[in-house]
Image (cartoon, rainbow, N blue to C red; front, side, top):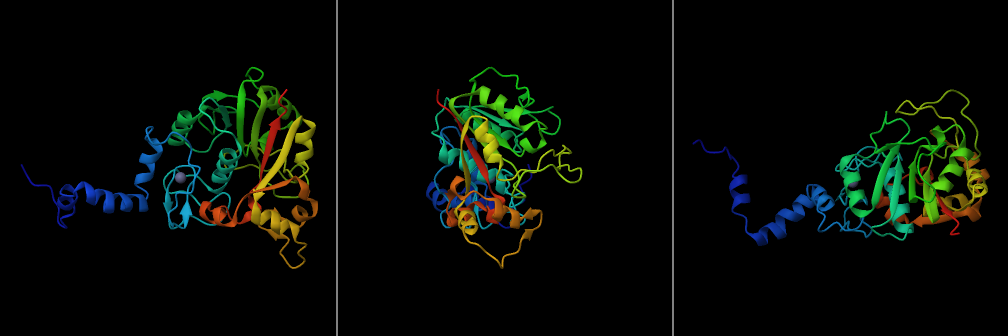
Length: 308
Ligand SMILES: [Zn+2]
């Protein structure tokens, strides 16, 4: 039998490692490079609830979805980037998850539905451990999901969902009010929706030119702050959740700041905001750790159905 090649003696040292050494050296090292995170995430004996506390231990970046901590996320500071090297979450995924888990009374029986989730098998397995979780997609084309659902005609009974997570879907639905009335119908009394759409401008309008997102689905609406009124008209109590830094930035009447940041029309976003609707939910320190920068790219509407 030929010996296993081990030129640097690494295998020998690992095999002879004592339990104390494993605890003191190898586990922190594995955690540091991210190898320990999937285990924490998948191990049901340890992972009885979503990651809510800060477990960053001095790291510069922390993924609240899988628990990875490290020096920084991959990519650039943008809501569609800053990718977690372990679970693949991007910055907006982590902000939505933060809003949901930090604002909702959590329990194992929560019936959670997520429309067109980006994250795959590992994330969904974890969500199923924590909640009664299902995922949906309009046609099961661009996203794998448990069920096909059209938000304008939801094939689910009344009062059958406690929490709806809907990231970057409503802008692809032609009839917003019809979708919201269907969502209101399927939510249980006191149930809630965490609604995420790109906020690129202050007031809602259809795109000036045909617009498609990466998965080739058409954009019907570019939403603004006035979406809040439409949500209230549909029977929800609404708070607009933002990072603290964004709320402070909107308070300032800046004349020197740039009015355009890529796709984001900051001039109309500043002009049309309703300050009383805003609810700061993320400190500057937590925003840096979660990689949710720049702050103006992160908005989630919390919509609570009346309890009766
Ligand atoms: Zn992650």
